[in-house]
Length: 186
Image (cartoon, rainbow, N blue to C red; front, side):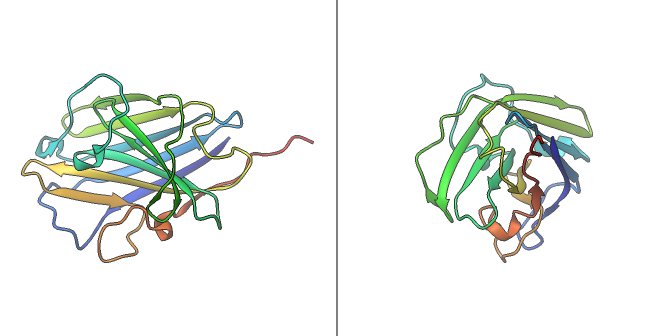
């Protein structure tokens, strides 16, 4: 099993009227190709808009509201996969052949999304089924990100890093975590 931990930072130049929050994430990929990504958000969350529970379904445009994101690609390759996980339980997955170059959508099992919400803490865990990650035999570069919606509709952009003046989660320079390839049996 491979694991990556990180703290996400708010884009310093994007306007944000929301509260000061702390956001961290941990992602694991098991040798059988399954995995899990958990986002932990803490702070005065009453000032945020958190989507209400809905039927678990694949939905486009989740990033327009509070949403957690995972990007995964192989080192040196231009293609990558994007996952969007909403606190509502809705989700999306996209493949790209290169920077923002859409590829046919992946056929993946729906992730199981669990969310707990308290006054000052939100935890969202997305469990990914076998085949959801790109090849379990290769190293992966991960980009972890989140869009948080303040009560006035302002969006805050959080990621491992922000290499450009504008928020851009697709920028491969922000895929700053690496999961090692699966250990081979002797």
